[in-house]
Image (cartoon, rainbow, N blue to C red):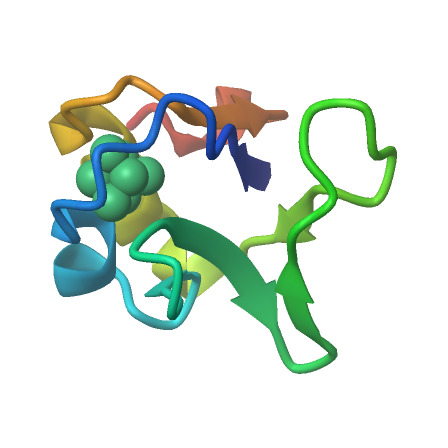
Length: 84
Ligand code: SF4
């Protein structure tokens, strides 16, 4: 599963970071970004590199963050295996 955030829709409430800080992180601009060991993804919707891969053990937390996001701005790809 891969995720990205559309910062144009982010409210900055920080819910995603509270639920899964390993994947989501608020930055100095008050908005949330996805990140991994290589850094923050801040390229926006047109950037093919906007995704980060979510480790299998973090899948449930990442999906919880998607469900709780008030901006509905966390987008996922390839989450079919998470249903169970
Ligand atoms: S939960 Fe959604 S709206 Fe809130 S900070 Fe995270 S991405 Fe932004």
